[in-house]
Image (cartoon, rainbow, N blue to C red; front, side, top):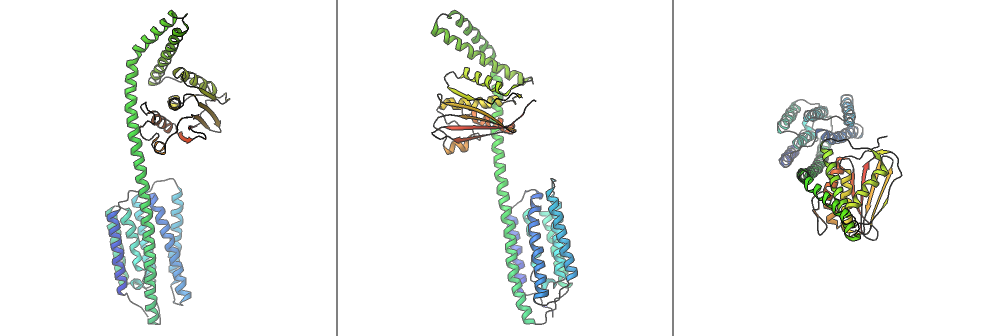
Length: 435
């Protein structure tokens, strides 16, 4: 005999409709359709397994004749469709919302065909046709949601009049099976909706965090760009007075050459002025797209550290350089990034700075260690992300500039605590040799 729909199905359909409406009002997904296809594939796979188990259970467990050939054909087509979707997701190709809508329409149509062969609206699982509508409400533009809802409503209307009834001889057993099916349908629907909505929530939270990180990086880069503009203007203005300082220091050093105290100070002042002029010349060369000469890696490090020692004569530095003869063309900004870290180390620990560089495979590791007081957890979290200073003086721009430069070079800067006190700053950079 044929068993008809009970009030429970209508009640559960109202529940599913309320769920979809509430979810659609609280979530507006802007996730890529490619990410949505992966989640839909998981839902489709679980429904295929559930349908196959249900058909086998009714046909061989309860001896209710089922149209195995057409229903099996639908399940095979859905399985092939799932495999093609999995293969498509392995391709590095973008997806569109129209493609995602087509997948939902295909799932809804296949589900309606299975319901047609298993009792139509009398099947307690008919309300699962609302699951694609719920997913669309979370994921798609309202126009496509209403389109899918109209298709689902039309298919449900057709199943009211056109379906193949299930041949159940015992009406009492049929009613019990119907109630049991409704209960199981409730569990499946609740699980599928909870799975998809919670995964969507997690993906949206991840996206919001990524957007917040990008906004923070953009603000930092804007501040650094503004600082670079001011630095270029200042460099232009400093050229004339710096030349005067260098000339005066040279004359004073020559005049007091026989005085060990004043002469040494004048010579130091002249070297400092020469170092400042060299920095301005490098800045001007980069602004004019001047070519940077290639040097052996150890020679480049030695020259850089020598120039830094002239600028920081009070700092005590020990170095361990790589014995590498490959020519190295330093990327733009790398030297200044290293000098920023060296200056920070010298500010907190002028008497104990260790510099080491190691080339491993295609990665260059540069370690700069100090014996200062270290960084607090709050400062570690802020380092390079915002402008701050853990010192009693200084602008606090060094780490922000270094992070920005290394990110542009596909490198990184990590800060770790040292045994015995102090901080170790490790610069990691992809190795680029000119040989």
